[in-house]
Image (cartoon, rainbow, N blue to C red; front, side, top):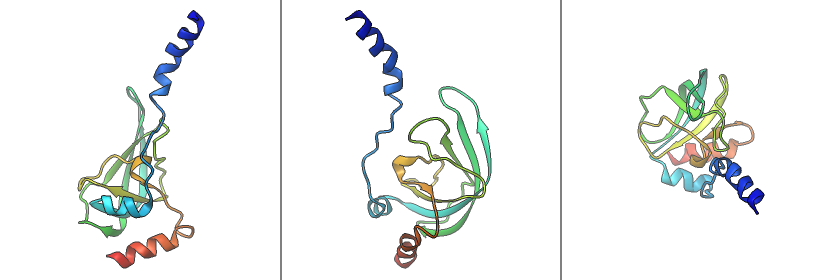
Length: 130
């Protein structure tokens, strides 16, 4: 019994790191967001710190689908959690935000790397909704 309690105590911090997002379709994410845009990451920098490492990414907006053009030119994501969105220079990302000054992105917002061929229909749908 003591061993079981000991194991549970050791596992408790890692259980809190699991990503638990409300399931959401792209359509719901679009409706809930104030700003939706396609961005290309042009530079990344890993920032070490507590409790998580962060990735800061400079980006350029390549296409605006919803909301006003944003003024922020950097995004950040945690580098070591299950909810993280891997930000990699040279890649394009579809960014959903319920904040006009989007800064932090993660899987719970549906923000993600975009394969423009695979998601061609979704991007066309967003272009038609403008």
